Amino acid sequence: MGTVHHIDHPLVQHKISLLRRKDLSTSSFRRLVDEISTLMAYEVLRDMPLHEIDIETPLEHTTGWVIDGKKLVFVAILRAGTGILDGMLTVVPGARVGHIGLYRDPKTHVAVEYYFKLPADLRERDVVVLDPLLATGNSAVAAVERLKESGPKSIKFVCLLTCPEGLAAMDAAHPDVPIYTAAIDRELDEDGYIRPGLGDAGDRFFGTK
Image (cartoon, rainbow, N blue to C red):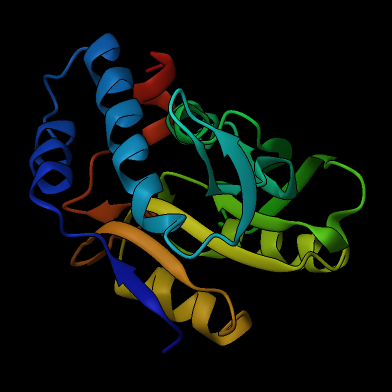
């Protein structure tokens, strides 16, 4: 199995538990997704490179360390991945943003691409792929495969929930891509939904069901 980072911080686990509730309003669901993704960003970006700069404080000259947000790209898998995006941008507002449009065929569960737009010069950039759920893994595998064609410096995958089947699919196709998640649930059901899960993240975030 490739590298899987289970973010088990108490605040993240508390909010994931609240997010699962079926009686949660759309506005509360959105707020929690935003809060969780912001908290997760600290762990996901723990190893971001820094460079030294000169600083004049009110008292003296010193040096400090800063990140180059322009070399970081958040790639949201449409449509639900946009829910995680705002929380990540709260931490690194200078990051570039890309989008990959994929939908899951309801019969075959195969990912079908309908949109692909990324910043230029991806070879100089670190990419973080965002999707709330890593279920069958088909969308994640397809998205990372397309990204690799552009040769980014590195790729990470971030989701709120996953399951053994999704992790196995990613490991088989992209063992070099680390996965960051707040929960590893029991299994997939016959319809490709994570159990116990939280339902359809896109529908719950956008209030479309």
